[in-house]
View 1 (spheres, one colour):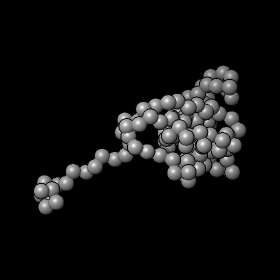
View 2 (cartoon, rainbow, N blue to C red):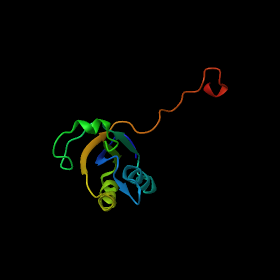
View 3 (cartoon, rainbow, N blue to C red):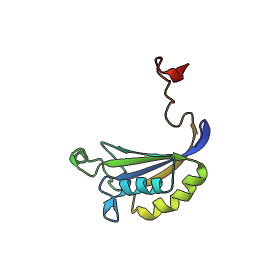
View 4 (cartoon, one colour):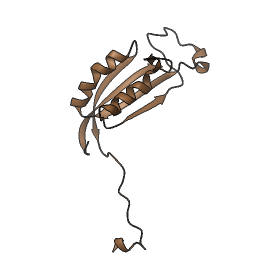
Length: 121
């Protein structure tokens, strides 16, 4: 993906204990995104959540292993749309959203040659 460009953010909210093929769901989603050569993915663990799966905010969640997990994937709109049915098939419950975003920078900054490096001249 070149930058700057317009792109789509796919954000997936699941529980830490959610699984697909007896493996963590968040892990399986990221591996599938990599298999499909998507630009990249980030998994973030939350510390507290509220939603349809837990109708009341419970303090015990702070001590639970089933904490919220958010998976962010940014890529072209076409690749995100192609990935959505795969995600849907892997999930039993959760929340999936998409949002149009502007990518300002993508990738690593090019290293500058060292001053003592003869290639710097």
